[in-house]
Structure formats: structure tokens, C-alpha cells
Length: 244
Image (cartoon, rainbow, N blue to C red):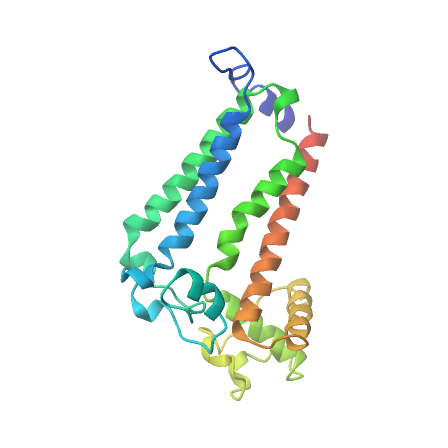
């Protein structure tokens, strides 16, 4: 039995109805709104330095890069991504709440989509648009729970600016690089394949030709991750469509 046949055999009600018996896709949008609320909650939790909830060492100072954005919303107006965020350890219940809201939104979306008739189910454009909307709060987060992105940045700089080979030359071989202080594993060369290195080189050229700044690097890598996430979603849709 194919995967597509297995998916069709999953139990599900024909469709959800309102009290008047009208088919309603409103539940799907409610679930989508709940998911967006979860992402926004995660966004807020990681920005609560202005309320004294987040330890100050999580938020690192830079020169006025975030001033406009944070000056309009938060009292801390100059923060950037931290190599290792201690917030997850300091406030686990808040993060669990944000993740719980996200999980509930996902589950409700699956139930509602399964219950709707085929003619009322959201199409690829709708799902990609929603995924893009959900990714915006994460794109704007200045906090990172992993410092791996700084290694990616360094590998791109090693190949592009220093004429080195990231597969042989670790970032700390170039101690004069101002971005080395952000790298947790400065003594480790790249363990990623050439395709990812080519992308890192491309992003390095883009950033260095526009605005060379650590936050610019982080933002373009986040944007790349979001675009690849949307592309993967479209790819999964295409694969499942052929398995129907």
C-alpha cells in the first residue's frame, strides 16, 4: 500500500458545520490564528528584558542597529542575537507555554483540514502564505537558541574574504576577523557539504556589498532558512499530490 493510500484511509469526519449547517472553513483560520499567536508569544517571551523577565546577559549591545524597532516597542532598544540564549533555562514555563500554543494550533489545523471537504480545504498558496506569516516573528527575533549560524558566517568569510579553505582552515586561523568572537567552535573547520558552503559564500558577498554587520548576517541567514522552509513545504505538497 502506498503512502497516499494510507493517508486516504486515516479516519476523519466528512466536514465541520456551523449551527446553521453551513460548511465552515472558519475553524481553519481560527487554528491558523492560534498558531500565529504561538509564534508571537515566543517572540514576546524572548524580548521581555524591558519587563525584567529576561536576564540581561541574553541581550547584547550593538551600535543602534535595532534602535528604531526596539525604541518603538521595548525599552531595550539595542540588542542583537546572542550566541547562546540562557532564556530557555531561566524561563522554561514561558517557553513551554509558547510551544504548547503552537502545538495546539498545529493539531487543531490538522483536525479541521481533515474534516473539511476537499473543495473547502486550503490550497498550496494559502498554506505557504500562512507559513510565511508565521515565520515573520521568528525572523525578527534577535535571540538565538543556537550559535551555529555564526560558524556559517565565519566559513563564508574564510572562503570569501581571507582566501582560505573552510574544510581545512578553522575560523580561529584568522584571529583578526572581527566576527570570530561570536563563534563557539572556532577551532573546528566546516563539516558541511560544498552546496552549503556556496550558499554561505553567496550570502557573504551579499552582506559585504551592502551593510557588513553581524545582525545583517543573521537576518540573511534567517531569511534563507525561511525561504528553504517554504520551498520544502511546496516540495512536500508536490510529492503528496503525485501519491494521491
